[in-house]
Image 1 (cartoon, rainbow, N blue to C red):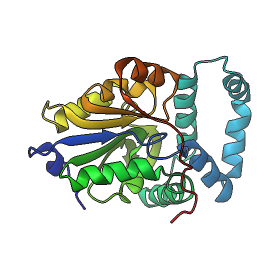
Image 2 (image 1 turned 90 degrees about the horizontal axis):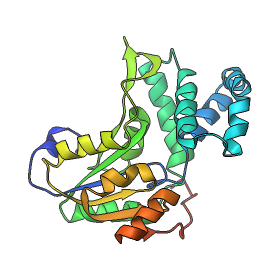
Image 3 (image 1 turned 120 degrees about the vertical axis):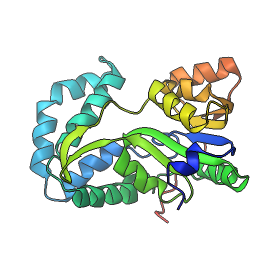
Image 4 (image 1 turned 60 degrees about the vertical axis):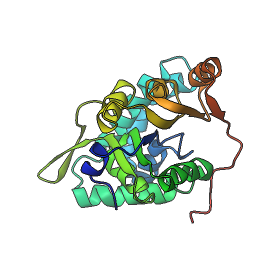
Length: 238
């Protein structure tokens, strides 16, 4: 399986980039993180967190606070409930999350495009703010693709509950992609939110997949392709 860094940092093959959540799957990682805790004997951890964050959750649902900041903070809070997990335990959770949340709701049409790019000799990288172990498990179902997510901090193979650095979003994606492409223009890029605009601007063929309002407006003004949410995400799990 071609997931080594060297296979992507050398060679002239054109590069294609895609976001994950919202772009390749209609599933939500936070749903999976929550549901794993609730179904594997950690109900108390999650319920204590949810109770302590109830005022913020209500403000979020009423759209009275910044949604991006809330979502990132909520993901970090959920992640800390996994503090003390071994690498093996965390990896088992990542497999469960992909199989029960992200892969069943994958967007087949967009994934088919990526595989077509591969068939034409292009390199495909899935680049996302999603935590690296979870993203890696999803991308392993797409042989030949590379996964670049948000790295996690493990100390002596025990999860500290924290990420390393910052979420791999916005400008951070651009830094990674410019290195991988050796400064060349991307052949194509796929994203679903306004924070993917810097990545999409790097490509010859930017595609907005089921975009949020900010990205939809930008795509319309710039003449980018917009893929609407016409297809039903796959629910078969197959």
